[in-house]
Each structure stands twice: as C-alpha cells, then as structure tokens.
Image (cartoon, rainbow, N blue to C red):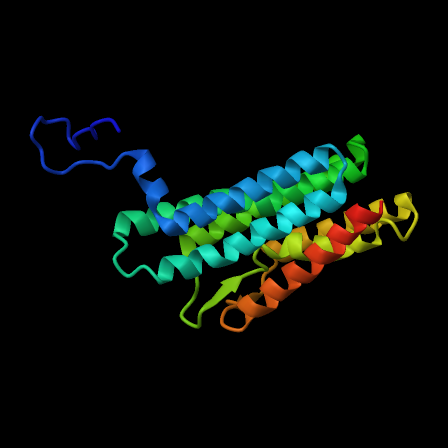
Length: 222
C-alpha cells in the first residue's frame, strides 16, 4: 500500500489522509460492495434479457443494502471517517442497484425502444434527487424521511416480474412502465414515512428468500 499523502503538504505533518483502499477492509463497506456486485450482475443479466437471473441478483443486492447498516452499527469502534465514507458509498451503490438497475430492466423489457427512455430517466432522476436530499437532510426528529426509499423499487419490481411469463409481453411492458413511473414519483413525493427497521429485517430477508426460490424454479423450468 502506498504512503498516504500529508494533509497540508508539509513533510512530517502528523495529520494524514487514509488510503482509499484502507476503507475496503471495513466489514460494513464489504457488505456494501457485495451489494454493488449484485446490482451490476443484475444489470448484466438484464442487458442479456435473462430476467429471472437479473431479479435474483437485484434482490440480493437490496438485501446487502439492508444489512450493511446493521453491520456498521455492530462496530462501535468505527472512526468518523469510516462512518462518513460508508454512508456516501452506500448512496452511490444505491444509485446503481435501485435506480440504474430498474431503469435497465425497463429498457430491456421494452427492447430498448426510445419510448421506454422517459420511464428509465424518471427512475434515475428520482433516485438522484432522493439520495441527494437524504444526504443533506437525513431523518427528521421523529426518525422519518421524505418520500419512499429507493431500495423499495427493486422489491416492488421483483414482485411485478412474476407476471412476465403469465401475461402478454406488451401488456407486461406497459404494467412495468407504469410501476416504474409510480415508484419514481413516490421517491420524491411530499410525504414522510418512518424508517423501516427491527422486524422489517426479517420480513425483507424472508421476501428475498421466497422470491429467490420462485425465480430459481422459473429458471429451471424454462
């Protein structure tokens, strides 16, 4: 690992900036990066129109997003730099997994028709606005946040995709398009909701496991 540069540029200054890669050894950040791996894998499968595999990947990416915070809170000795770095990295990974991922899924279902671009753009723009707003304002004094968190998009879309092999492809594309537009609005809508925690970890974990089993069955029977 290279020598960290000196803050202020004066040789011998004891205030040093950490190396970028030093944050990778943080357990919470490792979980976040696992989520990024799942999100990118989902995009890869979506581009190849292997939708069941894409849904499985994006579900596990969201699950990692849920648990990275739990892992972080179990590490009382994390420095302030590690906390801030992890929080910013989490937002960037959320953009890939919960905004770009659903956008690519929508475009792929629409066979990359230009008519599907506005819907894809809407969910990405909503993700950018939602995450930027949260990074500035966070939770209010009641522990509530503005709008629907963007990690809900993959969870909802995963359920909608169960219709993919049941209804006509054109009808399904329209249903998915409307779903994405509604989710995009809810991410920036002027309402507040409490942070989901506690028993919700069990609910989301069970949801991911059940849908993973369902989509694995779909893959095997195709």
